[in-house]
Image (cartoon, rainbow, N blue to C red; front, side, top):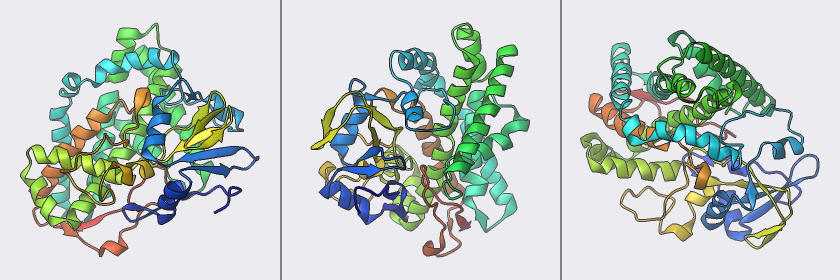
Length: 391
């Protein structure tokens, strides 16, 4: 692979695993230069040490969306936290942080348990076989985010479609951008309605507590961030994690039993799957050095979370799941001030959903050979298109 190519290797997988080319880049040239149309250089960081350094250093690296526009992007600024630097990021995040403490999230726990049970009931009524994505992995995170935000019930199908389409690159980048813009229009309208008549969800609470301090666009940006960070990602983890457990019956039995081991399995699966394959782009604020490479002011750095979480420097056998391993914190939720604010909610969903599914259907198994399970191609959020199971 030459420097003049813009590879999509950071979005490619073979089953659960990143392609071998990504590991080769991490070994031979861990901060890899790529050129995008227009001639700008983009750097792909692949080692855990380098990725963690970039994500944690807001002094040398910027997230500001203005940098994306400067590289020729035509998408409107989506708002939210991911494309914001301090002090604006600090101001916005402090509004959300109280809503994502474990004490606040425990209010949602009974509702999450009920949503899971409702979909297990629906699976049982439909009968074997079923598509686990359609019947379980897709609707549960969607409904959880809808409960959190306060999305009206009759609009939840639109919410579900928009959150899925934006991460699917198979139809090309323009289709993904169209989905992003449509999603922002939907969420902006929702924010305007919440401003007029605040509901019981997160958006309504933010209006009541900080209405004069937050614009409609910022409210929509919050909703968009929770949509992108909390729906498609959790859907992928529910499906991929279940698939892995079905292929590993010893661990499946332990998860079915519940207890503290479930949390260890969830954390290790999060690291191993790393469904969000790259972090929000960073831009060098100054000329600097990273991993032995000179990066010019204004150049983009893409951080491969997938490669970083499989870095052999973290320990032995990082390409397999070991719930008992002791390794540094994984980067599946990012790192630093931009670490996913909804991480505790996602972890709660996994801890509830996996054991409940396996207890309800103790004979759960794949309805097709593993080799016939259709995985996504070239998606920022990795996953399976469908997961046929029998019980």
